[in-house]
Each structure stands twice: as C-alpha cells, then as structure tokens.
Length: 318
Figure 1: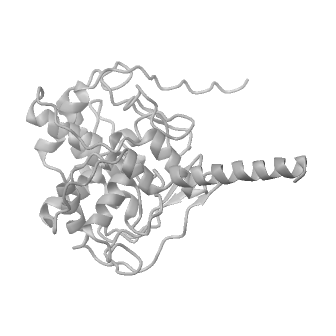
Figure 2 (figure 1 turned 135 degrees about the horizontal axis):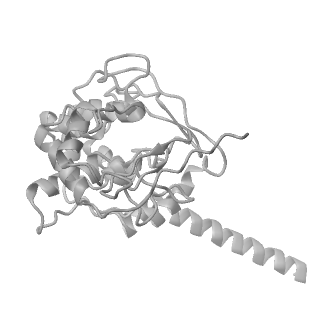
Figure 3 (figure 1 turned 180 degrees about the horizontal axis):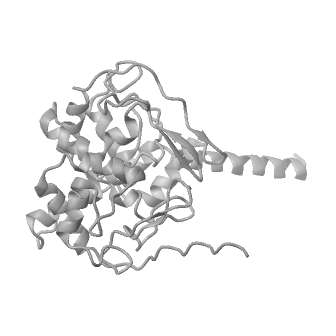
C-alpha cells in the first residue's frame, strides 16, 4: 500500500471510530446508564383523581390543547412555540390509540417524562420540559398518566417541528442530555417544613417554573446560578420574563400571600394583572388548592435572591 493509501485508510478508520463513538454517546441507553436513576417500580395503575392535580400544576393543557377550541381537555396538540432554534409544535397528548398516547404503557410515559425518550427510542427536544418533570416520582407520574387516559381521544397529528440545522439533528440531543440533564428526582429537605417541601416539588417539578423564568446559555440550558432569576422571553419575542427570586429586582417586596393570590387570580399587589402566557399558567394554578398555592409561594420566597434587572428599553432615535 502506498503512503497515500495508508493515510486514507487511517483517516477512514478514525472517521469510523468517531462515528461509532458519537452513536454510543448519543444513544438514549447511554444516558440511562450514566445518569438516569433506575426506575424502582412502575405502578400497575395510577389514581386519575390525584393525577388531575399534576395535570393542572403542570399546565398540560396550555401546550397540548388543540388551538382554536375552548375545551382544555381536548389535547390534540398543534400549539406552536417560536424560539431562536426554530418552531416547536406540541404533539397529540390525548388517549387516541393511533395519533396520541393511547397505546403507551405507564413505563413509556414515565420514561418520556423523566428521560425525554419516546416509546420508539427517539430523543424528545427539551422544549418539552422533561428537564423539570424528571424530578417527579413514578407514583405521581403514573397518576398523571391515569388522568390523561380519562380525557377525550382526539384524532390528528400535529406537524413536525420546523428547526434549522444542526438543531434539526435529533440524535445530537444525546450529548445535550449528558451535559445538562441530571436525571435526579426531587429529594425532600428534612430540615424544612412539609409545606416548603410541597412547594419545592410543585415549583421545581410539575410546575416547571424555572423553564420560562430563567436565563439560558448558548446551548439552550438554564444558566447555572441564575435559576428563577428571569430573562429574555424564551419565545424570542423580545420581552422579559420576570425574576422570581426575592431580590429587589424580583419578588423582594412581595409577601407570600401576594404570590399565592397571583397564582389564584392573576392580580399583582399593585392591582395589575398578568397577561400573555402567564395568564394561561394562572388558569391552571387557579385549579390547585389554596394550600398548594401557598406552598409554592413559601418556596419561592425562600430562594436565594439573584439580581437580574429588566433591561432598559432602547431610547428612540432623534
């Protein structure tokens, strides 16, 4: 073999090794092996009544209800989330056997919610906030699944996402998960009250408040040390999502009762009201119990204060 032939063979060998390494690192099984906790047991069935609490806390209808109709239980999907990465479209979450999750098992659902993997082994994009849902217990996720199965079956599938390259290359999400998804469940803090732990579980898990109320790094992951500190609208519309920490630039002057009231009625202490996507959140949190809203408020007020002032609007040109 000539020197040139040997170089080509070596290059081909390195390329093959690189491709094999990429395939292994991006495989869903690799994440499960390295980071995801083993599912101790999958409940044979869940409690649909209890699952409604997680349905409301998680705001499932806000993303998955079919646009253009008022029934928030018809989860045919199709809602669009416009982001700097492209347009994400929510899938059918109804119990339709062909177009929705009607043929899923509890294990399928738990894996999707905690690891971001579909029953056929594809990575889900983290626009679906499994990065927060992964904190929930198997029992609570089984209850949520049981509730979803009681809702109307809706025919029809949403169009696929419309993403630019390289974000359209779904397999690469395996590397993203290894870098940014910890795979851990919520662990109660024994030094805190039962109400505080309930609030932490709701805010960090099912409620996934940090997903909108945190700044993101260049890879779309929540910026370390600035969780809940607010930031640019994740939909890329130029707005600013408020700081939820008790800093002066956030909820510093709010009482826990003020926060609980906003989660119930949408009204702020200065008699303003929320709008946009937060109005949809309030429609869901208003269905929770007073105790749950107060627990969420208690937890938010206990967060470390993080400064993240809203940017000043650009002055008009003269």
